[in-house]
Length: 279
Length: 348
Image (cartoon, rainbow over all chains, first blue to last red; front, side, top):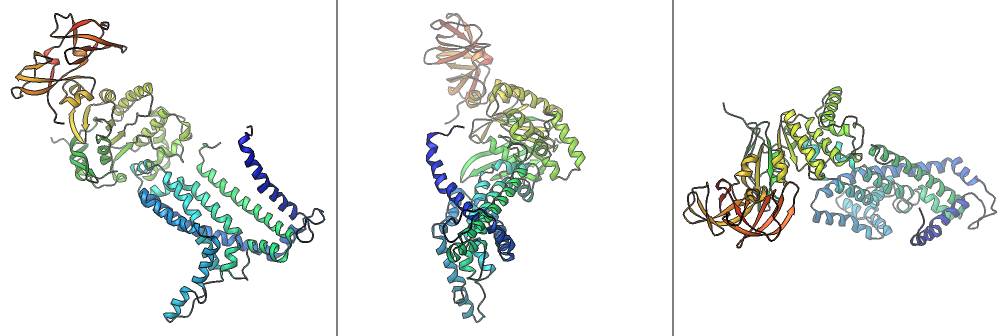
């Protein structure tokens, strides 16, 4: 297909803001040297070797994946029923409910996460009530659960919205047809609604898993300083240690990991939709 | 012996937010009958069908299935299957799985499903289509899959909601014949919804004409065509000339300024009535022989016949005839007494 004139600005945009920076990250990950510069331009895989040879770094990667998976599963379990409830409502009520889900996203991501600090902290809102009632203060913050909570809280809308949008597009006559053919509510769900909503689930999983696996703000704020995820590892290389080359290498590793995960989920989608409609 | 009907609707009324869409519907449908609900859009025919299928609850009245009250039974517990207007085939399943859907839910053994689905595909002329996707089928083929998917469950009653509406004319005509044959072969009750009067006349044993949520007439196609109950039915089924008339006494009616013999009786003296005459019942004669005189103002060739508009005094007559009279010709029109249908005026 010919590239039309109209597409040139976008192509330019993509080159300047996506392809060139990505190339620089790749280049940086393949070289070593001091600080910001590109070093002595001798290509080396030392940065990658450093990552995989150090058990600690690999553990950080697994911890990130583990936590991201957990938050994705929890978001799915919470988000799917939520999306279904909204999709079943009348249009006016539906719009209000969607708005309520979207409104928190208008607030800055950092602020929203900071708000949890004041809720969960040692002298936070919840613990104040708990101690007033005469109980020991609870350990609510600076642990796995707090980070998980932060992730689910921040990324849940990205699970709900795509599933909701797919569910509202399911033709009601398909549901009636299934009932007509003898399917009770449970069968209608397992045999018609759920299979037809898989594209929404895939999108939701991708949109939750990707930011969850790479987040460093949530783990930094709610996990306390000691909590290290892959995002924090990258951040620390750039901000504190100043080893851009190793930081780039970790970024590349994470990106490849995400690409692989996406490829797997997309494969799943195609398999399910099957029937040869696509190819 | 008392006859049990396949379906009886008793005093069915349906309201949406206080608006009455069905008004005291009473229909008794015999077993193996091909019954058509016919009417313009918004007349309540689809709502009636949905009440029989269980997708809507009547505000008042009962639905009786083979003598049993099923008014509150959900759709999946009724021995009734539906062919939906837009087919509603499951896009995530192939043809085989679509047709097997109902049987799988009823946990029919696998090899039995296999044979029954194959049998159905043969019935609807789609052998070898088992593993095709829904998208790869044409409208007519999808239609037949939808019918197979319903029939494979061996329902006692099959509901069809304007199933041929999306098909082109030729295919629709073929499918009409095919459906009618299928109904005779499988021997089950068909309840068919359409707004196409020709379709209704072609296929039905019984036609129920509906308008504004009320039944206008129930009868065989021939009865409904030849003896319409009122001007609405006459106008809706086929083309009609409907003119104002006055009933002088039994068997005598006046319209178009002339007095005619007719075969209707039982009206009040001087009662104002609607007189309905089918365009093909007006016979073209020489101006001196016809009680009605007029001038041809337009001629349209319709294939088998010509459609002519004849302007009389105050009335434009539609005439169907195989004899063509050119525009401007003065002609006379004659009508036999049995072809004059006198009807009570509907108040609206």
